[in-house]
Image (cartoon, rainbow, N blue to C red):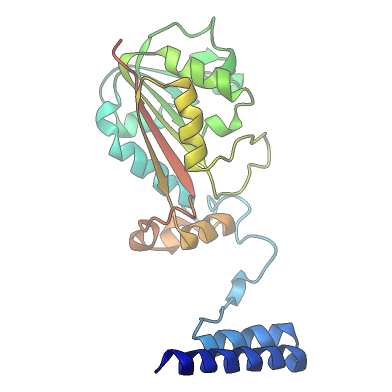
Length: 251
C-alpha cells in the first residue's frame, strides 16, 4: 500500500470513529475503536469490583504475591546471610536462607515481639552497637520508618565493613491498614536515596513484577492462583516489590 493510500485509510478510519462517538456514545465508541484497531477488549469477569478479592493481601487465600518476590530476592543473596545476622521482628528469613549463622538477633519498634532490640530503627543510635553484624535483613521495613534518612544511616552503621544489608520495599501492593506507610518510591527513587547515604558501597536494586502481578497483588490474589512463569516476567513500569542489597565498603 502506498503512503498516500495508507494516509487516506487512516483518515477514513478516524472519521468513522468520530462518527461512532457521536452516534453511539463514548463507551461503544471505545469498543468500536478497539475492534477497528485490533486492540483487545477487557474481559472483567469477577475483577470488575471496587473491593479486592482479599482484604488480607492474599494471606487468607494462600501466599501473598509480594512474598514470592521477597523469597526470590533473599534466595538471590542467600550467600550473604551468614555470621552474625540481625533481622527485623523475627528470625524466619535468616532460618530459611542463612548458613553458618553464629548469632541471630532481632529488632522491632513493637515490644510485643520480644525482640533483642526494641526501638525505632531511626532511633537505634544508642541501642544497637556499631559494626555489630555481618548481615542485616530488613523485609518490607523501610517504607514504614518515618525518618528514612536516619534509618538508612543506622542500617549501615550497624553492619560491619564488608557486611551486607538485604532489604525489600513495597511498591504496587495495598497499604497496610494498621500502621503508617510513608515511602512508596520507584526503583530510580531508591537508587537516588541510597546513593546519598551509602555512596561508597556496592549496591544492587532489583524491581520485580509486571501488570498481571501488580493486579494480582492489589486484588489479594495468591501466588498459588497464578504461575511462576507469569510472576517471573519483569516489566519496569509495574514494580510490585523492590529488592535492595548493599555490601558495605571494607574501609
